[in-house]
Image (cartoon, rainbow, N blue to C red):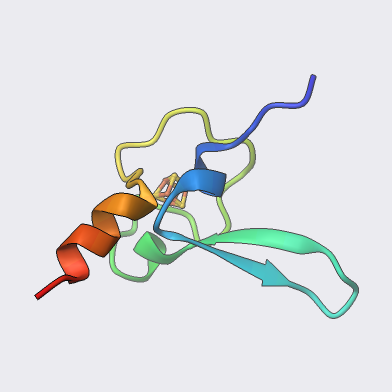
Length: 62
Ligand code: SF4
């Protein structure tokens, strides 16, 4: 079964492509919060830190 990870739709996700072409999902919350792994094991189906991208745009507005 192919499960979609919450990370794919999260504003804190920063995809990283390795030199061999492999794609990893990096959680930017891990920089400041030890509860989050730098490279969360996929798929993530439930996460307190999840934030839709639209929310981050709203907060960035002056
Ligand atoms: S906050 Fe949660 S859902 Fe968002 S990228 Fe990090 S681990 Fe994934």
